[in-house]
Each structure stands twice: as structure tokens, then as C-alpha cells.
Image (tube, rainbow, N blue to C red; front, side, top):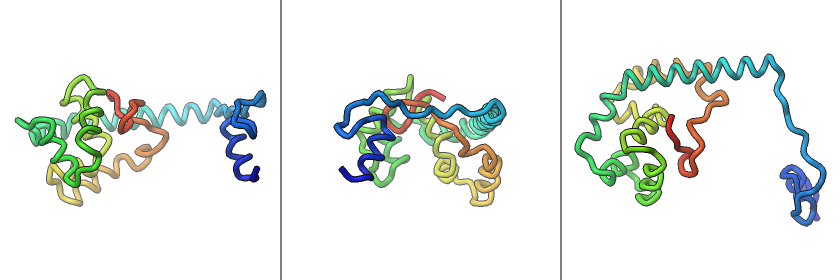
Length: 151
């Protein structure tokens, strides 16, 4: 067995036969100081997302007024990827299409603001608010498809 395979198996907690071995991996436990920093960033990010939604949600949802799911898919994914069936599956993970569209607005801020027809300068200004905590240890849910779940 190559060293690379051995390392990969060990990292996943398996022995050379692929069985879960008795040697557990050392679990990283962040310090109390790091937990406080993480918590602050998560709260800041959540607050910024709520402000972002309150500012753009009405304009965003008006783009899809009277659209069926297929038309919404065509607007969000003009190149056809992900597939329509995958899009339907992602919507089913939410309580409603409106909830999915709100999730999409938050998870794809740049693309959403482009669809709302904001200028590049307005988009840059809005995204600058997220520079400190924007991509810092933040998830938008834990669903199977597209990482979706209610916000």
C-alpha cells in the first residue's frame, strides 16, 4: 500500500483494509478565545444577512412574480446547470419556493444583485460589508442538495 493511501485511510479513521480501526483521530478542540471569536463572526454574519434580506427581498421576489418553478430555474440558471430535476429537489428541501428564493438571494449575493440590475459599484459596496465575516466559518444550512435548508 502506498504511503498516500495509508495517510488518506488513516485520516478517515480506517486501517489498510478500509475498516474503522481502534485508533481514533485526535479531535481538534478550539480554545475558549477562538470559540468567542467564531461566535462573534457567526452573529455578525447572521445580522448582516438579515439586513441584506430586508433591503433586497421585495425587489428580488418581484423578479419572480408570476413565474412557475421552471421559469425561475431558467432565470437563475440560464446555462441549465444544475439540471431542472436537481433544482426541483432543492426547492423541495424548503417549505416554499419563496423560502428557497430567499435562501438563494443570501447564498448567491453577487449573482442575485446582478439579476436585480445593481451597478458594479453598488454590488462592491454591499459585499464589502461581508469582507470581515463573509466567508468565515459560515454555513447556510445542511441540506443534501446545494447545501440548502432554511436560513
